[in-house]
Structures are given as C-alpha cells and as structure tokens.
Amino acid sequence: MSIRIVLVAIGMTVSALVTALPIPVLELDLNRYQGTWYEVARMPNRFQKACVQAAVARYQRLDSGRLSVENQCETANGKRKTARGIARQPDPNQPGKLEVSFFRILGIRPIWGAYWVLAIDADYSVAVVGDAKQQYAWVLARTPTISKSSMQAAIAVLTRNGYSIEGMIKTGSKPAS
Image (cartoon, one colour):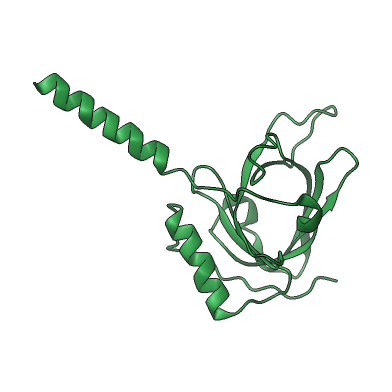
C-alpha cells in the first residue's frame, strides 16, 4: 500500500513538472517577427545586468532561414552595449520554440539558449518571450512603450506560464540611434 502511495506521489510530481513548462505559440511567422523590437519589461538576468534602459532587439531573416540577432542597451555611463547572435527554429512543428546563440568559436556555435515566444498579438506589435526554465522573460513591442492593458495582458501570459513576475523590471525604451 505504501509503495503505491509513493508511486502515485512520484507520478503526480512528474506530471506537475511536465505541465509546468511554458507553452509557446503554435504559429510564428519569422518574416513578420523580424525587424526592431523594444524591450518594455524583463526579468532580471546576468547578461543584461549593465543595462539601465533603451534595450532594443533587431532581427533580420537570413537566406538560411535563421534570424540574425542584434541586442543593444544603454549602460549607466550612457554607452551602448551590443550583443550579436543567431536565432534558429529547430523544429518547424513547434515554431514558437526558438533557440539563440551569442557565442561562436571557430565558426561553430556550441551553446544555444531557449527563446520561446509565449504570446504575440495578431499584428505582431507586442510579444512575450521566455525560456524553458522560467528564469528569463521579456515583454517586447514595436514601439518603445505599450498601454497599461497590454502590459497587464503580458504579465498574465507570464503568470499563466509559471513565471514569477516578482522583481520584473519595467524598462521602457527610447528609440535607439
């Protein structure tokens, strides 16, 4: 009897872990996704620690089908920090699950990170992006600011997908030069 209870408890735990994964969008048009996105909010992360405002991401579709990625932000001393990388869609059957790499050695990209589009509105003007482990999240928009209702909807997407929004930084952006 006690073994059965333990097995049921293990099964419930595994089931909870499996269902706790974020759910990316089922449709994502990379041609429409490319272009400039302004960061309006993010979860704190180590690679943007120096960023104080004006985070901007630019995506451009490459002939290979991948996206070039250029992330820029403004640091406390007013300088721009830039990171360049590549995004790919490893499984066309899961278009919202992208991967990004900002590290290349000898022409090889050995490290890829999860970049999941969790929500995007019909006109591709606001997107909610996160990772598979619910550690990183961003609210991106085609304009430097979004409405209060759009921000509330983005927060709801993150919460529904298991992200703790405590400590979320509402960065707002200003157009980058």
